[in-house]
Image (cartoon, rainbow, N blue to C red; front, side, top):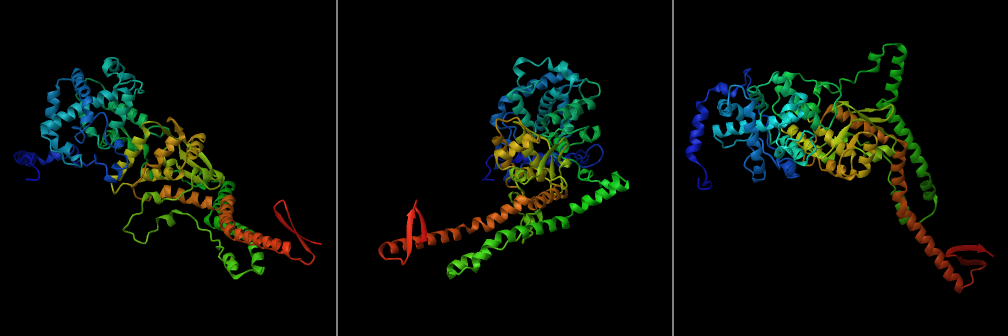
Amino acid sequence: MDSHPTFDQHRWVTRIKETLAQELDHDRSDDGIETPVSIFSVTKSLMVTKPEVYIPQHVAIGPYHQWRAEVYEMERYKFIAARMLQEHLQGITIEGIVNHFTKLDLKIRACYDRYFDLSTETLAWMMAVDSSFLLEFLQIYGGNQMADDLTRVSLRRSQVIDYTGKSMTHNAILRDIIMLENQIPLFVLKQLMGYCKRENLNEALVMMLMGLCGSLSPFKRVGDFPHSQNEILQMGHLLELLYHVCVPKIEEIGAEDETVAKENPDSFRRVFYSMQVLISSPLSRHLRRVFTSRLLKSILKFPFKIIRTIHMPSSARNIVNEVPTFEMKQATQNDIESNPNPTVRPLLEEIMIPSVSQLSTAGIRLSATEGDIGSIKFDNISGTIHLPRITFDENTEVVLRNLVAFEATSASRAQIFTRYAKLMNGIIDTEEDVKLLRENGIVINHLKSDQEVADRWNGMTRSLFLTKVAHLDKVIEEVNEYYSTRWRVIFGKLLKKYVYRSWPFLTLIAANLFLALTSLQAFCSVYDCGGIQVNNIGGVMNSTLV
């Protein structure tokens, strides 16, 4: 204990006794299912890249960052919110709610993956005050039925509780309350809402929650949210709810990949569909790639075959013979993810896909969809990549990074959002890439410049690892394969191999020729060249027969 002089042994023992004395049922939810851990700490590999997007800067919600000096200023607003809540409580006071939360102590603690040395009473007061502040903040997104409450917000709180959502303080708080380490269990909000004087409490809470997610979601999903009201209220916290708004269920991905033959049973369309399948099949693409590569290879190698027939020194002949033999290597995802040591996971940066500028140059089109990640697909017939429309504003980077961090907390969860983030990271390299995405309606940029969007995307997924998502991996593979069969791409690769790499040899020939003609001119200026006259006209060597 000498290394921990502030350790309170008596409090530690008391805490153990209190924990063991509580009934086991307190650690279970109402339906008898154990409370899962849902509020995690951000991994160190992510935290070191950009800690300000994971650590709250203005308001602390929950126990992880409650005692940081930077968030003290907002404590008074939280206390005011708790006091204002008492006007809406029905037959109970804040102290009564705190007493109720003390009975849920173990259930609340079970939601967090980190141990925090707080007494039961302290944690209960923290939940009551923080949830009061959240409920007041969420009123902004509750629709017309919350308008009466909003009109009573005092001027000194108007920057925090901003109905328009445009004040800098409001957006800063919005970023803080969606961070992974700044969450409280959603059932705490539900419990507090249950004591308010309001009809249809669950419906009102769901409306506020979905209004918040709609404001924060970078994707604008078409149609209603696929989860029911009960499913929404069973979510662990706000960030988890936002995650399910942005990321479709695994079984939903690829559900739209129905064949044209099933949708169009008539024989003509079945034949047309069969022709499409034949044209876009891997065998057909392989034959086209082999034919075009061999044709261009023969054309570009023809001059070098002629040069090899000319008598030249052995050193120069060796240079010509070292011209590499063309062999088309397809940059597929299987090539990238192959690893001789399966226990070592490759870094996420190793994903390979052409940038937007390269895709556009090769003739591949870009098309925006109104859906979510599940709407990503590639059309081999038209050569079009379909990507969801994403809005990029001052809140988007924090949202995206924390969604990636939340997804990384579960080893069993498919890393769909991480894969999408890396796909966008792969196709965006420069300002020009963002400009092309913006012009095609895929990126709606509310930042100062396209370069700022490119910089934020490029640093989005550092220190993460590759994961496999069948739907997105298929799109990446199809794009790479289609891109590698384009005439412009094949010609560019051949030009680089057979022309650009031949410049040293061509330079050697030109230098030797210049040296030989210079020597011949010097020799003929002294001696009679036997009927050969060498002139230097305009700096160019000319030899003519007299």
